[in-house]
Image (tube, rainbow, N blue to C red; front, side):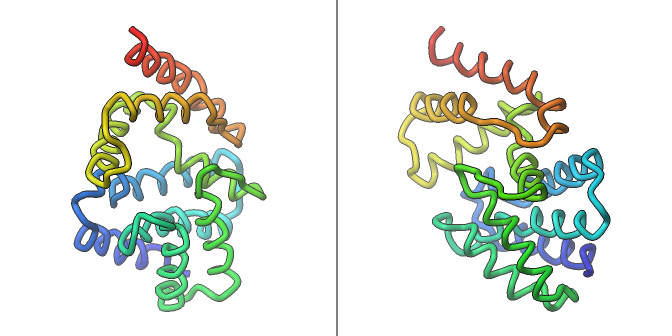
Length: 193
């Protein structure tokens, strides 16, 4: 598996070809999720092969936005199945990557340990200090796509999402729950001053 080569190729492709409308689901988000997946994976003591599969899935998980925002996870899997054989991934490894990609679909319902890690990595920012900066990029994207019509509507969505969300891994809960709770309370204060 040639993770380094495929990472260079794919991040460049995202930067060149992804519509500027995607102010959240872009190369920066992809790198962020890859780093979070690697960090959580190390803390959870996963093996080297599992780590490569996990990082590859994080790399590909939102590439489907190159095709469509609708059902982007399935499009991401199609892209992974097309590209990964060129980087010495076998069919079984590609199947694993695709099952991890599909696990990121919301509402998240991971079926195994690696799926739990990628789900936590994908939503790592919910429990970070930069949450509101990143959230603003998601708001801009949803506005451009016509998914929402007002900032208040967005805040209601975010509040519901934060209230319902639970991290799956011990590492993510220990690292992110405290700040996520602060982010939730601050979001609530914006809506109900």
